[in-house]
Image (tube, rainbow, N blue to C red):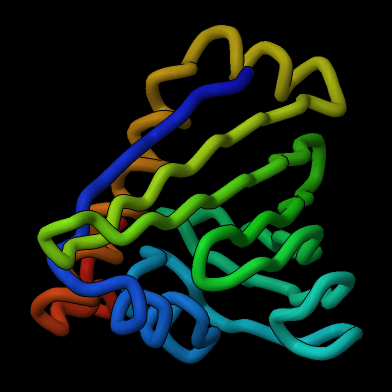
Length: 153
């Protein structure tokens, strides 16, 4: 399942990147993120791997991020793998004439088992909604400093 999400953040591209390209900030805009653990490679660079541990409701989830392309401030791509599902993520950033930043995210979810195939088929809106939630939470954090650390998922 492949789809595109977009949002406009009321910050110039350089300020946007200062917040986006900082693993310490992820907890402020990714609901349920409990911990980030560097696994290998130079953090944030192509080939680097991180373990992201989430608690979503009562469900624990471990995701392995692998950076596949980095051309900041314009592009950042990665793969996100968890049990039964891979997500190829392409992120594009563009500063608009008025000084705001447009973030375009292309998500391509690939099920690796029958259960995930069913979930993608039955609940595509849930995946799209989650992507938009992360982008909106990033926008709120970047613009106003609003953190989701104590938000319910």
